[in-house]
Length: 173
Image (cartoon, rainbow, N blue to C red; front, side):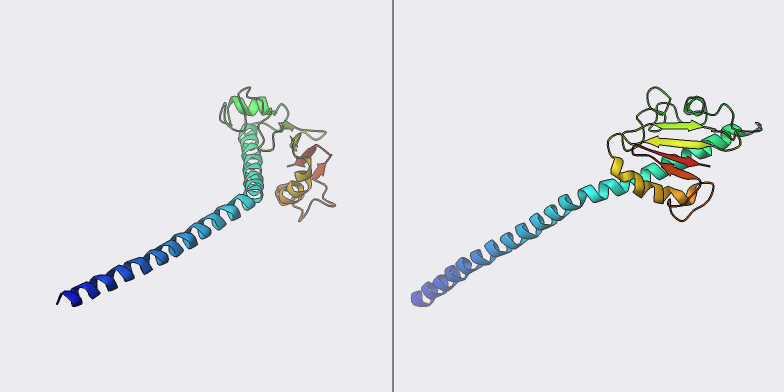
């Protein structure tokens, strides 16, 4: 009986040692999958970040135009409309659009300013956004914003209600 007990212990020890290798392999595979996922996320971060900034830019522009239309109620046109005027009432003070100075300075998601004017026609609004830190994003944003402007264009090229320079985007509503 002692021989049988001894051989059972030997078999059990042998199996325990074999399982240690399997656990090591499992841990290695898990670590490699985790590291691969982390690297993928880090490589995708710039693209995701720029997409989120673009979506926030579109949302902010829409909020500014909605606030301007609210401000215009009871007035015949947009004469006197400005970011400072909107920040007094229609837009949240000190928020992400108005900023600490309540003028829209340095508050767009690309580091630039929001400016609201009427241009030559007081019945129309011109929303200007500057891009001091990321000028290559202007063409992408111009195409994204073109459908929301007054002319309701499919893209910025040939659109009469959106124009751009090397550092700004002007949208007419």
